[in-house]
Length: 116
Length: 110
Image (cartoon, rainbow over all chains, first blue to last red):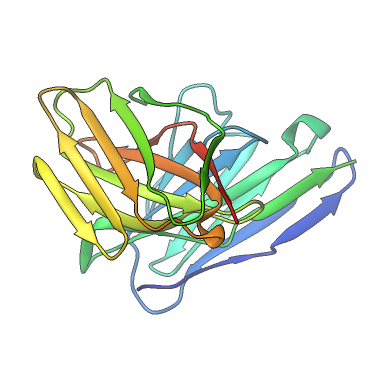
């Protein structure tokens, strides 16, 4: 199957700082990438849909100025958590759709963010 | 996001037994359904997907879909300790977004 690489796999940052998470499709082009957040014992909640070359579409309740998404190329989307606070500590997961396999999305390894 | 309901479990089965997982969804117009397995601290990995009513088998896994009842299930035959994980049901919305259930935790006892 297609490979999606997410980096870093874990990060610890101080409250008030910003953290950037990268999501790359390694062997396919992804016009659409999805960013999810998962709190312990809970399911994945879609935060935003990232479209190459255009603005991301955010889900209701997700602050677009706090979670900045950039999808500058067909293989890279980034999520920047700005002015992070402890309540932003979570597991962030990206997924990408392969144009050749429209039915499924492939997930990155996830990023464990801890804000102290 | 549309509603997707799963029993949270935990579901405990002995090794070699069949594990049966259930999922219901609210949007009658949903067309595509997915089962993911997620190990603790890892991202989900796709087990299988199903579009048509009836059964779809892949190795030890069988997905069953009943659109009239808005119900999709996953059977794991000959359960192994390595099958111990959280299983997520996902439903694709018309605009290709996935809505996930909360997941069912399965423990296979050796």
